[in-house]
Image (cartoon, rainbow, N blue to C red):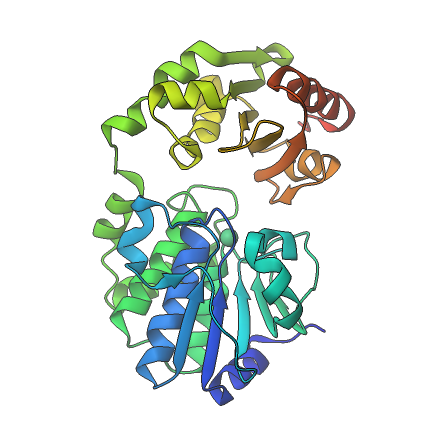
Length: 324
Ligand SMILES: [Mn+2]
């Protein structure tokens, strides 16, 4: 069943014990919007537990500190809310235990499954953060500074610092309002977007070495195996920028990264970033994954990266079209 932000706010207001679920491989949106709810609701004497099956990447720790746990015991009186989670699979290891018990799903993915009892989904919202902002506004909980900053971080994150196509006038208005309430936009954006480490620079030689240019330069593809990651001391979360880099090169319409998943040999992750004219969520769906029009991903099972690439290239042949 679908509900409005008012109804969701009403249910949250009544609850005393709340569990907030972030998606696996967390990004700034799921972390920022879960933490905003957690900070604001804790201030009004609610017990709040934040869960994510993955470690929170170092660069997002400034938002959440040590707030997240990987699991918790249930007493049965919890209001369980997922945030930025399109489908039970996105909960990763938390899915089995928590997906069937999820009461409210707050999300902005275009394609998803209404797995919660009550689904608050707005696919026009740039980020889950925009929807959480609405809920906190209804609850009159916009005075908590940590919540305001976390919301700003979630919105800035999912809009690539307000430059992706999902950014709307409303996004800017909400962001402006958050700044007026005290969000330090400069500090937050620097932490999110100007946080190079020596390790993060290791992806550049990897990018140059493994880059393949396809479709007359309109598609850039970069493959990465676990051996290559290991030789550079990198793990999957260090590769996040690769797909956007891949799209940036020569203004490609589609940038793709195909990487072997950490700790596996037969599982390959596809991350895609596109620009106007290419819908990468269609390609991801064809491969059994999902996401947004300009940012999507999928998982491919294959015995080696060459085979995984073959499956990916077939999917491109079937689904990729360039609208002018
Ligand atoms: Mn999101």
